[in-house]
View 1 (cartoon, one colour):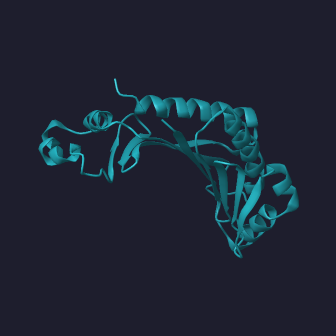
View 2 (cartoon, rainbow, N blue to C red):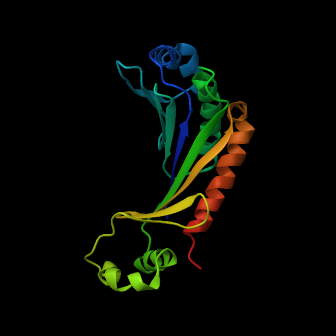
Length: 203
């Protein structure tokens, strides 16, 4: 099964015109791009949003409104190290303003090609017995699963869609300075993905 993750990082600071202009300038600077070291620049909009491909299967979208997002296919150790390096650089770039000393990180993990039996078991973990009748046709081969979501452990929610099972965790709040350290990012992502993958397991 392929493991795909998405990491969303949001700064809870006011997106004033002045701050967004400064952020756009910092994102587009050669210094920032050199430090992130992308394989290619996919897009730089007139508004100042930047999308980069770090390596094949790993990209990051940076928005001047105060957030950036990693999308990673087939997660592995090499991609984790690239995420940590880019994360630390972008955390410094995004540290604009004085409204907050904390930031939020959300992680999503998904698996594709999940057997129907496993989908059924996962659904049953998150519903009450009296809902069984309402979803009895859900398990038929010609039925697609769309839009089912339920909360399991604290701060974790399961989402079932047409591709399989996704798990979302967040927000995890942390001091901004800690997000500027690569080792901290690696530890946080590994720990979080471990929790998310464990939630996906069917016992």
